[in-house]
Length: 302
Image (cartoon, rainbow, N blue to C red; front, side, top):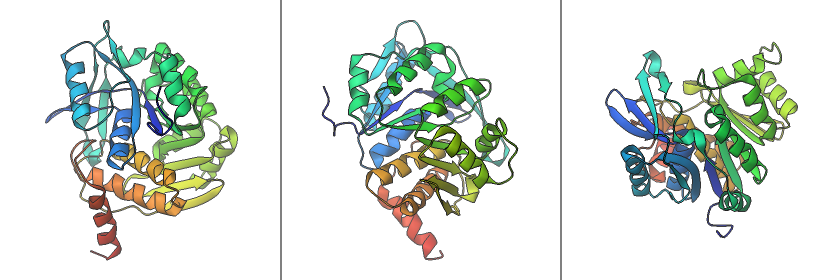
């Protein structure tokens, strides 16, 4: 089986086609995170499931062309490859119609998957893939083998329940969510006013080592080991926000893997998230130097 260093990060969950007004694009938060990790010099594995259909074959080819390892893409003979019909709204918000059931609702766990996760340093998973009992049960089994468990909150009505979100948070070590998700989830437990109070509540209630909250054009905040870090964000001309949060998460994981300080990790993640928002789609072509250039130009006041 794989050496420990082969796949230091494993991403678990949905892969799909986003059908946008301008055409279809490959999507799914776990694979988006994997793409950006790969761009940043890490080698992620992706556990997902596609249909035995043309869209599935095409999706696999697209990711292979982006140098993403697809050996853990399961193939489903009964269910079609995932589809999402996305509508762009005002203020760059996106409304999603997520088709179900599809192949990624039926991800299976096996010995190979268990060994893959056991050898990795990070295991990245989200709430969306847990909408169906089959994948949810596989995920809960996989979590038994994971080291650093990174939960990406992705609340898409009607594809979540309070009970499932809470169960996943109880397993997590590192939590990533946006401001509206923070307010919604904290509202389940208490009536708090400040974002910092809300983060502290979740950190204490769920014994989380780290929580990062993205705030759109207003930057991001990170709470790590009970200490807070803030970033004002990078101002860019937004093309669309699809995948921006996924790139942010990949960047912060990548930097922490490299031993960067929380401040530097948050700074770089904010820059990559902004850069991706300035490009169309979740997985634009870029080099790390493009992100560094953005950081340096903003710091020079340009």
